[in-house]
Image 1 (cartoon, one colour):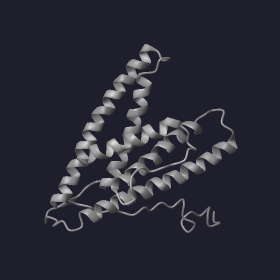
Image 2: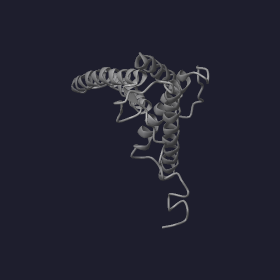
Image 3: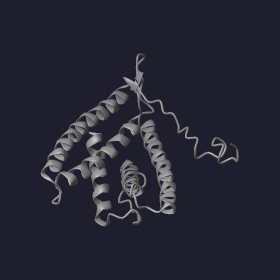
Image 4: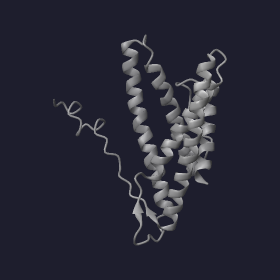
Length: 200
């Protein structure tokens, strides 16, 4: 199933990041550029770095200039994330372009890649909640609460994985069809953001 394949790659990316656990470390993709695994690995690496950006920027003692610089990195990371989602959707559009769509086929509430985006974030939640549930310096109450949350996350993984696989199967059978809306982000566009174009 595609969800299990993707989650395995997400786990690999997260584990490799945490060898150094440094947002400034060099990125290296172990998968060939023409494989979907390449996009999945890159997608999760972006998510993993941004996860730690979000931790750092919440430091109450962070200097204002450092926070601003980090905010710019988070903005750039969000753009990279959106780009990768669109690349992944392009893969599925190409893969299913010759499918005969049933007359009563329906469109899903989100594209396959945006569902996979949620699975990537979920992999990070599971990894870090597992860490918290096994902390040696935490109270018993903290550990118990984190174990309960981890159980919920694992149930969510099961449900989301099933939903992704069912969606892909329905698309492959022509019961559903993909309709992808390209990004309409306005804040990075000099023509659409009045601040960037010098307006008020």
